Image 1 (cartoon, rainbow, N blue to C red):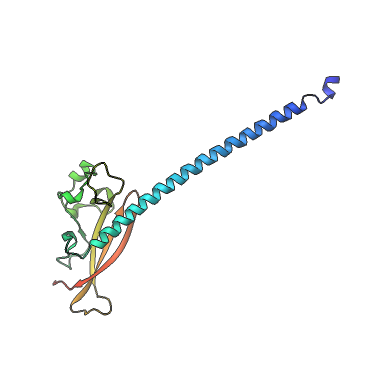
Image 2: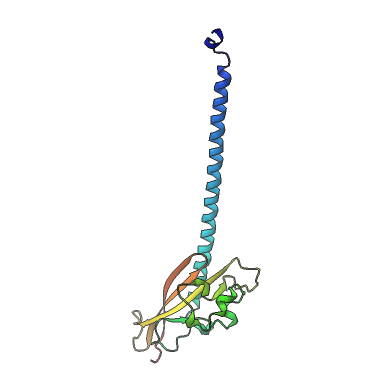
Length: 188
């Protein structure tokens, strides 16, 4: 009975219980930090993909309306919702050979491209690199001529027109911008 009433060894048991509790809290903290590192890595990858898609979209939008890029020339303004760009058989459609060969093989013309499938869109590199190993800045894009509209104030409506475009860019995330180029009114 005497051993039951004394408190010898209680400190040892209490310290072991506190040590187990602190160990569990430490493992929980390590697990939480691993999860937070994973989340921040995912956010960094998302931001990089978004920035490449956005940069590529604005790069394609800046090429609209200039004679240096014949793909975006509007020859018939009455042909609405027209996809513009190189044909799948052209080298400019996928200069870095990044597309799946079966997807590329199923496309005969740009009009056959499904606007809801970025894997079928023309591919390009933000740095305009065609090296197969340089795919860090690759993106897909689709330029669509929507319709002509009245030119903004200050332009003669008989001589000028505003041509509306939709430009999509994708790289694991998809963005869409609209644009207007003002130019001489094309004959219908």
